[in-house]
Length: 293
Image (cartoon, rainbow, N blue to C red; front, side):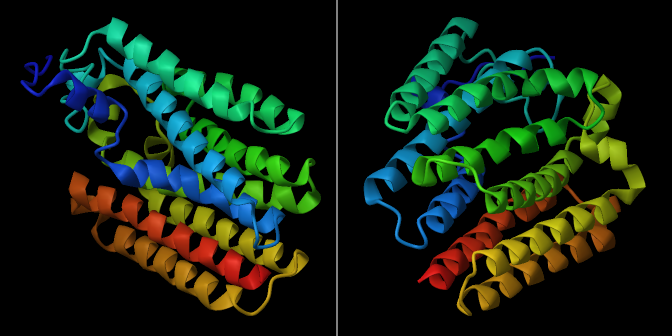
């Protein structure tokens, strides 16, 4: 059943379409991109490149949100968490959604032209993954892995923008990002599990079932281990390790909470755990910066 259209102004509906009213999802893509910039530049990235990465992550995440809502405009009205999204509620037309998508991709393309050829090529390779992720939810039992691969392009693009090449340590950081994304997006998917099951939509939360807290814990463990390996290979100074330990402590606490209350949690609980990963990622970012100086 479609939700009644919202009386809010069209510009505000576009803000909601882009998810700019929910900054956690935008920041959580920006953070790993900044990991790569800081590490590849050994703690002193060019400020103009930092600005391009920040704006590029905003444009890319905006495009991802819009294409997801275009794909799911007939499914979202049947899901409690998403039924009031602008396209689902018919507060914006499909034509407006396509226009906003093209504008977001156009902004990302302009920003990508600032980068070197390798980084630009990686931007182009990322686009099909971003556009096809919503399809994965219909045909692939672990769609959050597709999203994690899309997230991993933030590492590759940003590292290549600084160094002009991809190095072995780049792939370790990419692996940490993929594992981290699979973990936190599995937590996010738990909120929709009843609706996804009813509608036949795939998710990692459905795939792991009762083993979801353990699977999330394993993802975070792999993330922490690969980040530590990156710190050893770079090598990073002692400033990194206290912040790494704080991030690890937050991940351990999250898994503990999942084990304790997952069976009776509400949507807000999963949303809060998801948002806490912005804090964890920022701790790692500051650790990378301090350890590189």
